[in-house]
Image (cartoon, rainbow, N blue to C red; front, side, top):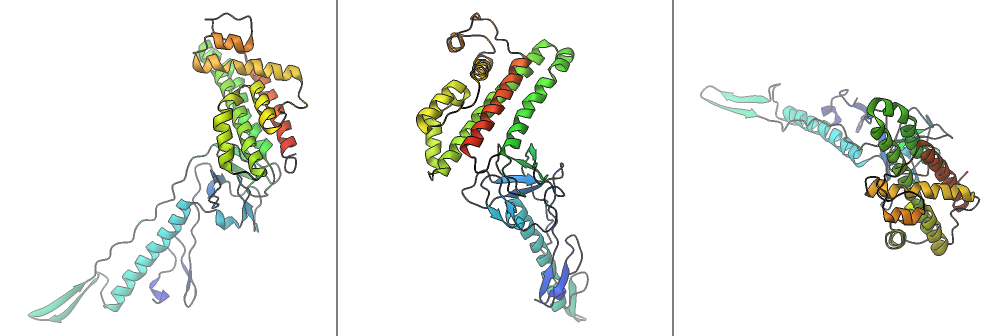
Length: 350
């Protein structure tokens, strides 16, 4: 096929760059926040999907980018998502269909209407060519991510699933930034408690405080589980072994700081509360325990809660949790997790 059948310009700025060479420009569409999707092609990497904001981070001349989950280095172009690859295929296919149409029309000598009449008088034959039609090229449909982080090293703004470790641009360890961003959500909920109380009433404000506590406990649990998975991987063990340990031994017990400390010490020889004050650990454990009646019993104190905390509260009454208590639990969680992370992964942390 002669490349003269391809028309220059158009939506993809098609250009002839040689006798048998064409180039097309396919700008990757961004989402409503100005971010574009990226995806790691390593089969074992999960979740592998993230987003970056062009114009932040390393600008111009970047030869290597990184997966924020597994830190696989590769050229930036290697992180196209499946949707973006399909978008490129659809664009090329659309241009090829148009070229084929023009080739047939020229070979058959058809007019602009796609028709040609042979002969005349009583006998004539009409040739007609009907194109299958060029398909519209839809924008790639990407997933929503709202865990946004700004790398303190290269200033890249990016979004990830869960708690990632590495900056996609400079490859530096930014786990602590991700952790603080996650805990900051709970801090903002607490900061709005007084306003919510005055506008929507005390029960809504109390529920916001309870939600902030639940989010804090969930973050604490999720981070410890991510540490365990990385600990197993660092030791050369398969991810399935870490999953079995978390599912069969840990289950949901990382929601209790004291039990979490026992499990880590007994099974992995890891000290959760090294260099952390005893009073801080005790306060965090007491506050975390309030999550049970809040989550499972509409905030009503039950026997299980009283046995766990051994407090003077009365069974059947509602558990009370204050902004100050949750703020202290957030601060304690951050201190415990950051110190543990630096001890476990000192080669990258800090």
